Image 1 (cartoon, rainbow, N blue to C red):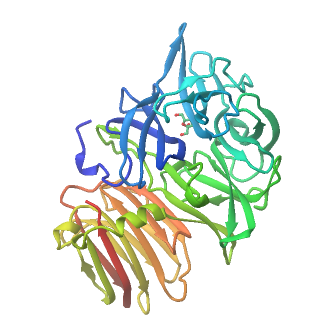
Image 2 (image 1 turned 45 degrees about the horizontal axis):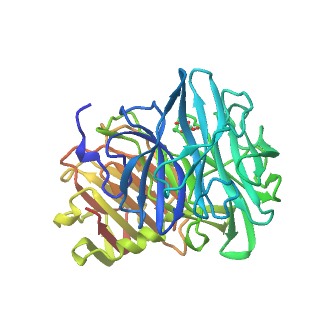
Image 3 (image 1 turned 120 degrees about the vertical axis):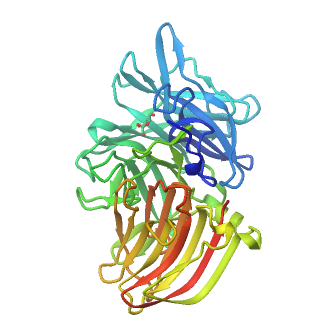
Length: 479
Ligand code: FRU
C-alpha cells in the first residue's frame, strides 16, 4: 500500500512501522507508563507475533524501544508471544529478581506448529527493556489449541497472585492463584452461557472499582473481548462480586453490557499499579478494511474507568485519562478555542477558519442545550461546505450516531443517552483517522475510524429543525 501520512494519528499510539494489535503488559513503574503491544516487526499485517515496546510519562507522547520479546525458534518449533501482562514483583516472590524487585511478564506462548497455547513467564532485570524466559516454561499447559491472554494482579487480601485467562472456544475464563508466578492453582471457572457467547472469548481482565466513588461500596468488573457480530468486534463486561476464588456476575443471564458502542475497540486491558489506584484502560483499535501504511492498527486514548449508578443500574463510565486531560489543558492559548452560549439555528457554525484547527487533529469538549432543535451535533472531516462525518444527537430518540461521509466505509454507529438536566455533553477526539466520541462524561463511547480525503479538514457545530444553544465549547488543537 502507498504511504498514508494524512491518516497517521498524532496523539494516539501507533508503531513507527508495521502491524499492531492488542496492548500488552501495561504497567506503571518508576514514573513511566510502559506499553507493550502485539507486533509484527516485519510486515504490515498480523504474523510473527512479538511484543513491541514503548513508554510514556503523560500517556500522550510515546518513546519507541526495540522489540522486548521477539518470536523465537528452537529446533524448528516457533513460539509466538501472544497477549499477556506484566507485574512488578516487588518482593521477589518469583526468585528472578537481582536487585530487590523485577518485572515479570505472564503471556501466552502460541506454537503454530504444535497448535498449542500455554502460559509462559519471563522476567526483566533491566526495567522492562528485555525479558528472559523462565527455563521451566510453560507454567500452565492444558494441552489446548486455544487457551490464552493471562492477566495477573496481586491479591492483597490473600497475599498471592491472581490470574484470569481465557478459554476462548468454551466462552469461559479461568481464575488461578500462585504464590510465586511459577506454580498456579486453579480456583474456578466462569462463563459458558453467561453474557454474549457468539464468538471466542479473549483478553479477560478483572478490576475492583468503587461505585459512585464510594470506597466502602466496591464491585468487581470482569472484561471480556469477544470477537463480534456484524457490527464489528466488541468487548462485554460483567459486574459482580469476587471472593478471592469465584466470580459471580450480577448481570441477568445471557444479557450483556457493552464497553464501547463503536466497531473497533478491542482487547483492552488496564494499567497495573497506576497512581492513586486509577483504572486506566487502553484498547486496540482494530483496523477496518481501508489500509494505512507504513503502520496498521493503533491504541485508543487511555481511559479512566469508573462505575456509576444510572437509571438502568450500575454502569461503566470511561473518560479520556485525567493524565492526558491535564497535559492538554497546558497547551498554548493559540491551540485552545473557547466559546459559550452560542445560539445555533438550523445552520452550521464552522470553526476551522483558524489554521490551528484546520488539521484534523483536535479534541472537542462541548455541551448542547437542544431546546427546540430535533438534532444537534458536529460535522467533522468536512469538505468546504460539503460532505463530512456527522456526529448527530437526535433529541426525540436519544440516539447519538456517528455517520461517516458517503464514499467512506459506511458504518453508522449508535448509542442511546439521555440528556442530563436538559444538556447533552459530547467529547470528540478526532486524530487524522481515529475517532472517539464520549457522551455524558463517558456514559457511552463510540470508537471508530474514518478516512477523509485530504481536502476534508473543516468542522462545524449544527442544530437542525429548530434552535439550540451551544452552551460551552472548548477545542484543543492537537497538531
Ligand atoms: C486478540 C488476540 C489474542 C491473542 C492475540 C494474538 O486480538 O487474538 O487473543 O493473544 O490477539 O495476536
